[in-house]
Image 1 (cartoon, rainbow, N blue to C red):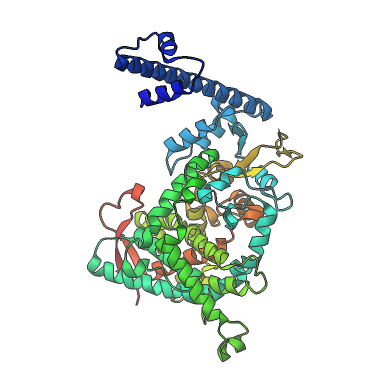
Image 2 (cartoon, one colour; image 1 turned 60 degrees about the vertical axis):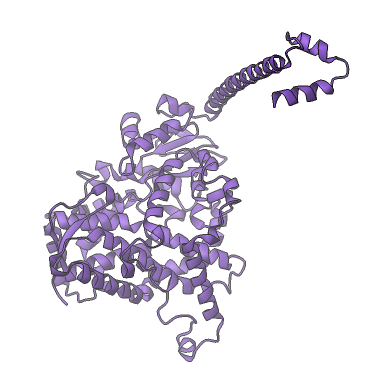
Length: 549
């Protein structure tokens, strides 16, 4: 190869003869093999020399850029680790080491205070008074670059969860908002009851004769099947098949860890799953779950295009007898045809599945608490008995059960679905925090829910311990004292986000959790059965004793 390249270059040089060139290279014409070898060695040495210098120059330029970016960020007055002034690598490595259930930022805030610089242009705030400043509905700050880690292959996503611009987000949220309204929940309850019956059939089968079962796994299957029932009008098949259908639980776990890490270094995403080159080779329509979702949406579109039946006409709406989210999405296509396209509807229902499935973490905490603290089951059962609830326990009945509310509130507060800073872009005029500190434009600022949820002055003793009683009125606690304590905790509770970009599906998530916890305890007693299981795998082994038919 070297010989051919050398002679090609030599033949194109008219001013120098072959002899002159070989002499200038310090090689003789004979033997020719030695000449070519020497030429190859020189070319190789020159290449290595150039690569070394390119590497050195690249490192120098990178260091200079880090220094320049740090000094122009205008955040010298914000305390934090020295290395965080120049790179996000500190946050990335610390998050990696902490693992899914840990949080290095708690230590950072204990050391540096309520406002910490965690990157060249990233600030973490652990002050509950600042929550309303950053996420208030009037200012409506755009989401920071970190949210783009949820957009694969460089595509422009119509997913409302990953939209940065608040105005665009509002345009896409408006057509579907009514589907998630609190007043709409009772319409979905029959579908939740259908899924509960499927769950209890599976539990009776698997737990027959006092067999040891992983109750957490079946709670996960319920959570995903019920959100499938509400999104598509049919379950995905977890409870029926007793397995991780389409690998959704595994994929959700992988993506959760990916997002948790990459939000600390969002630019790294463009080299990984955000690389547009990957989009040239990966077709999402070939994914089996995507096809399942698309086919279900197309099937329902065909149903909605048919003339309404007499029953539908009398009820004042088209669609299925048991309303679901998809029915509302398809209804909104008439009013918002440019927004609620078929692609957008498919994207929305898939987002429902992955977001709604995050409730599995909260259910894990509850069933784990029930097995390790049997008194909690008895307290909830006594509460239901005193309230006169009947099976199946309805959504309306669950809202009158304080301890059940405490179980749900505590589990969502601690479940750490993504466990990352909810970043917002500081506006052009800057942002002044409640402590008087001013943040310049170009800064990403946010609150990590776990950092607020771990504050004893807000949530009381043992803030990171699972204690549902903290949400209930204590013995001897006055009404005003209780209301003041509850108000303080609610202001600091960011379980579903905060402000204009609060989780749109929070009411649906609460519906599925309130219903399953109340009805599970109403029908079964969860008994310890040896080793409870591996917490890293979210296992909760127990045996079941039926209370009622």
